[in-house]
Figure: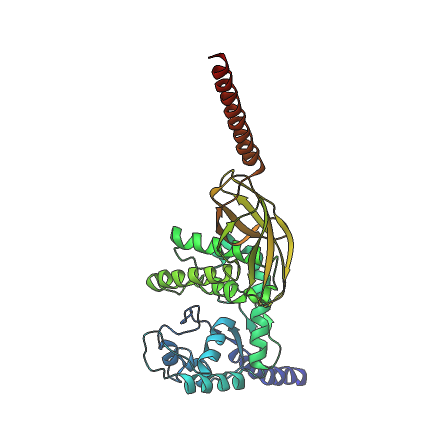
Length: 368
């Protein structure tokens, strides 16, 4: 009897603990919002400010009191945009922004409520897993590392990379797919020359645009904006197009190569003539310091006078093209050795013919 009472009392004491533990099981809170900015950092609307209010979709997640422990799944891209808003921002349509203080308040509350709870960093931009595997499969590890590092800085402590993926799949048209594929090719090429961190604005932006919550109209607009960003980055390594007048058979043309990246680069200058009036040699291994320009002497040999040109292209050391090709116009005002010998030979023949003609005239006079 005594043993039965002990067992019953034990169950009575243990059960409330079990019930309480179940009641306060960790709640999963997800913070992920599609981009509200252009590639330049300018906001396209002020909707994010409204969502960050205590009564808003994202604000309520951190301001509303909750009993129990929470586990946070956070998109570092969303936090980046809130941080940008908190530091002052502009809106593309000229509207007066209202969210700077709202963003500051939200960030302070976010840091406060997550201080003793687990925070998992989602892949930057929370992109569609389907399109990530199709378009940028090799970049996932890098995106996760960059996103986690940026989230750590905001919270002032270490977070954990989430294993959670985005199973959604938005419809991308041919233009959008081609822009994203082209962008990744350019990132891969440029990363063979410069520090990959310099390409983060393009790589992270690409991941953002694969977020499944971006509506169709906004995605089309943002893709065209992104295409301009890729063009801007591809143009950071360039050759200045110019015109030359060539007056000697052999001449070295001063061509300027510009590096607008912060990293020093080593490139090659590949050139070819557009016609047979000129022969050109390539220039290997040009080293240019970061944010500098360098003049390169390009050796050519003129074979005839007239108009010609060169198609110049920078390449990496593996001969893969970087930047855009440039046409260099040539005005060839030079007489080649072949032409000189032909002209001299013709002159000699004319002199000989004149002498023969004079000799014949003298003989005719004598015969008369």
